[in-house]
Amino acid sequence: MKFTDSPVIELPMRNSLVSLQQDNGSMHVGTSVWPCSLVLVKFIDRWAPPTPNPIDPNPYSQLLDFRNKRGIELGAGCGAGGMGFHLLGLTDLVLTDIAPVMPALKHNLKRNKPVLSKTLKHSILYWNNLDQINSLKPPFHYVIAADVVYIEETVGPLVSTMDALMADDGVVLLGYQLRDPEADKLFWELCDKTFDIEKVPHEDLHPDYAYEETSVYVFRKKKKKEES
Image (cartoon, rainbow, N blue to C red; front, side, top):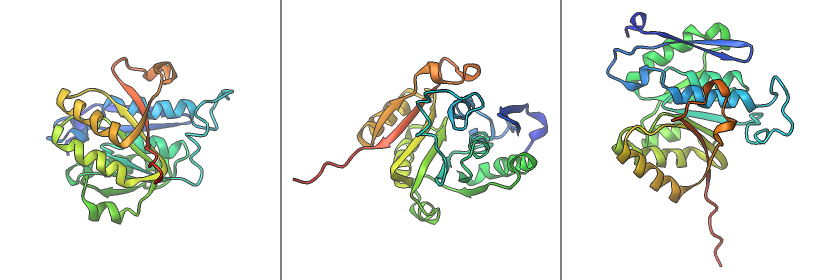
């Protein structure tokens, strides 16, 4: 991995600073830091209790109460999202991606170990691989993903993996930007069948990380209709 030739992204998280090295010359999108991961984690930074400057009422205090909850990140890439969530209190967390991206993820986890005070759990996961999904011991209360919709053929496996990993009372926290029109159309069609979808108002994003083309969504499992 040619990290030395790629820019370093510094991400302030309350009293900590995460430093992310990219390998922009690799053949895998996961070795670069994409904007949605920064937008998502800085939204969490703004609202997750206890907030640095208490906001009352905080509309997200219950949603982002990480105490005694498990989380998993899909498409963790360089680890910006997962490391940010860990620093904000979601400490029972596993970061996942495909095998070719693991060197970049491990590199950045090691690089930030002094800030994180531990090496975060990480695992290879190919979406819709049931053996790998089951080995992670779902369900998880939080399924985290950012910038993961960019190829149409991976959309079905992504949505089914989200559903398989997510607890009945859990949520998907998604950082999203349109990358491919066909993938985008299919993604929202499938999600609409599987989840109740809530879009975070743009004004609720972190003011320094509220990119116009990037959004944050909260998915919940649709309630199963009771049998009459």
